[in-house]
Amino acid sequence: MNTRESMGRRVLAYHEHSKHQPQRFAPGPGHLDWANQPDPFRTYAGAPQVRLPLVADRLTVAFEDLYRPSAGEGDAIPLTLESVAALLELSLGLSAWKVHGDSRWALRCNPSSGNLHPTEGYLVVPTLSANGAGPGLDGGVYHYVSRDHLLEQRRGMDPGEVSAWNALFPAGQFLIGLTSIHWREAWKYGDRAYRYCQLDIGHGVAALRYAAAALGWQARLLTAPATRDVARLLGVESGGVRFGVNDAEPEHADLLLQIAPMGEPWVAMSPKVASLVELAGQGPWMGRANRLSRRHGMEWPLVDEMAETTRQPWQVESRAPLAAPLPRLAAIRGDDRGRMGAATLIRQRRSAQQFDPGATLDREDLWRMLDATLPRADQAPWDALPWSPRVFPVVVIHRVPGVEAGLYVLVRDPERVEALRAALDGSFLWSRVEGAPQHLPFFRLRSGDFQESAYWISCRQEIASDSALTMGMLTVFPPELATAPWIYRQLYWEAGMVGQTLYLEAEAVGQRGTGIGCFLDDGFHQLIGLRSEGFQSLYHFTLGRPVIDSRLSTDPPYPAPGS
Ligand SMILES: Cc1cc2nc3c(=O)[nH]c(=O)nc-3n(C[C@H](O)[C@H](O)[C@H](O)COP(=O)(O)O)c2cc1C
Image 1: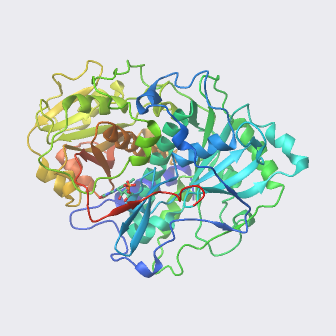
Image 2: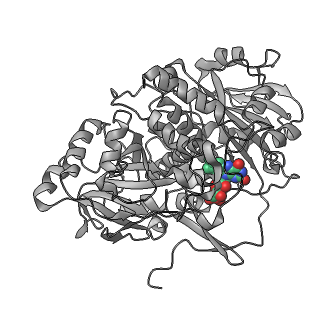
Image 3: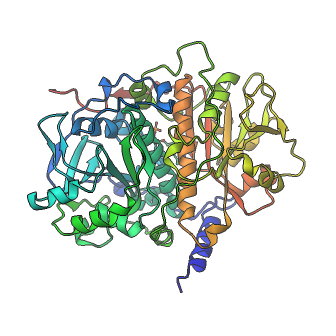
């Protein structure tokens, strides 16, 4: 029977099953079926297309200013087709094409495990003008195709429906929906793919939140709508006619973000979602989803099963306060790092594939990065989430002058200090780190050289040992998880958001980061002497001075207008 308890147990069983162990990686294909590599771009054949302008370059806001609590207040850019285009360009859009020999592959503003990009983005909007005047976009539901920076209209409102549809959106507001095509990740990673899809969603949420800040907008996760309603609203219900009855690999609905001008009082659109679903459901859906691989050599049913198990029922909207408000670490450095244009910095974000083991990270830059991951209820990207932090980076410092090499923990929610102390190795020091800003809950646990352990734990990847630091994101598995299995996905989303914050912060100080999904779960737990199943590491991250691969060349993300 599918009781909540049994679903909660299934989640925990999946978590154990999908761990990488030294003697046994999580079940996966074991080889890459290149002939059937999934198409990284979903399209809907037959859906009307709307080409979007490339306008992100016109935004002049500095990266540092995205953190201003009132960023854009009073001068939020109006909601038009043009500003929505900028939002998508800077979050889910392409950032470059890489070329090596005969191979060419796209990179995006949002990173993705294996560059497989399971995340799809949808726009749910009222009627928009082009750029303040003239016809722009009909109200409706659209799918974003990052390859061509265009929208596919899946559901357009008829003249008779449009005023009722538009009336459901508060002025200047709209929704973005995110979904995952699990097959893209499962093709390479098998059963562990569910985890990677959820981490990628977290990266996507933070990417959208930062991009929204560049326009003077806020973005918040809607916690109330049931997953089923999200799927209906986005037209991705499995097997449903909206999706186009064919053999396309299914998409699983993940979440809705509400986008609103900064400074407007927050009124969640959740109560409107049922009406939006009902209206959208009354008309025809356009386009047929493409099939991504000709053949599936192996299937990974557990991954889709997990998506079913973690579907959320309708919830009462909760926006619990985040942890106590913290002072924002003022720009520490006298130089102009962080003053780089936000649009430039967001599009130059890359994963380092190799680090210079002779390079170091400045201590002041470390404080800045850690500070950016602290939750603040009025600041990007953490104002997008309604819950107190559940992710606690255990940082392995290799090369930061002025900070001894060793193990450290950033307790992003001070209320968890005692629980963490009780859960970790009893001989850890828990000493405050000398020189760290007062408000930074950063503790030294043990001094020592952990480069070899980091390498081994990260599936023997040198990016974890040659960097300036690496980390495991220790995450609380709250007791509610036993009866609310959807919390499991939220934990990954938060970890992915920490990763995205660090990626951008690394760029801001001339360094580079890389997400690490391949790690030995219990190997890391042993390193930190974990004594409780109430915490698990869900994601790893590494950061330092990159070595650039000069064999690769870079092409622009999109052809120049008019070319
Ligand atoms: C969830 C996640 C897990 C990742 N795991 C690894 C990893 O274990 N090793 C690695 O070298 N890169 C890893 N990456 C980096 C991706 O390979 C990289 O994001 C992708 O190739 C796209 O390149 P870009 O980040 O430069 O846009 C990971 C990225 C994400 C988002």
